[in-house]
Length: 466
Image (cartoon, rainbow, N blue to C red; front, top):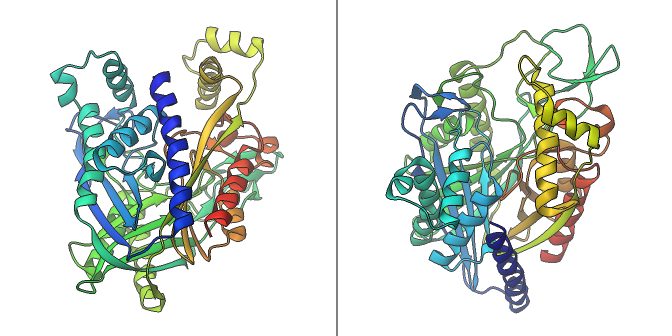
């Protein structure tokens, strides 16, 4: 696996130099966009969010947008998965690049973070390990992990064959009353995730929300019809609650509502924004505020309604495609010898979820340090679509304040942020949150200031590409 990671880094560096030469010479011609959708729903009985599945509420899918203009090509892959492990990203981007000619550094693989997802990552690890060892069998290829990898790669190939000349409409569209910061200051002075519905011990939230829904609409210039869109918003896709059925959740109802106005063939692509500390629970009202029909459907339809109302007001423009990326090295958190001995020997039977999470955190940090040392490589990508619109792809689950700072300081009027991109699934908090503690800090592996490093890197790339 180390060899494949090193190979990826070499190709990324090559891709970065290639992109710089492309931007220097300028892009000529109109932007073309292709889109694809492929069903990645596992068979019934395959685990859904760690329990055995009994059905499907709506299909899990991978949707991919390929963009091309002049000599520049890029791909945005969005899969209905909980996260994207680095080994899956490394393999898929490498194979997709080989099949399409799109540079690895210009391919982004992101997860929607659905909480009705296939629990497939152990299977993916086994598959990739056997592949690296040359021990794959026909049964492995036909298993879910093998089919998932094939479908992710195939989605890029299919999108590239569906290229259409497009124009762009883009904006950051406000949607109020749906997103709530889930970190609460309690009367005992602690900060708690989800302080409780109507709980008198909650004083206030300790963070903001981002009501701005990022939206890019691509219109087919040949017939003038809407072709596909990309939507991002900062809210955890945990609206269904506990379920034993597969579902993409809010994005499913978002697309259904958009298709009702824009046509049945319209493809709505979703990627999660900066929402490590944001969900849909308004704790000033009674709970439980979850469920497929009760919460998921109205949220998806409300967002779609706001988008449809705003589309006529958005300015139409031609594309101006450019791509850039940078790999930075963020510091891993530390732990003591005593912490490690405790984590290795502790009997988790009956332990709380937080205690179990801390044990897994310490063991994960030990494994990461053995592989990479004191820092973890993280990639930041930026995709310029026109003079007012850019996409930023970041790894991990990012705190909303970091996303707001990135948007506020971006040289682009419309800055869409995709998270859980290419690697790293854990929380990346804002600096002040480390002292406050609670769930998101326990589920973080990187040191305080790492999130700010990602934002600074993204802003540098955005200013360069502008």
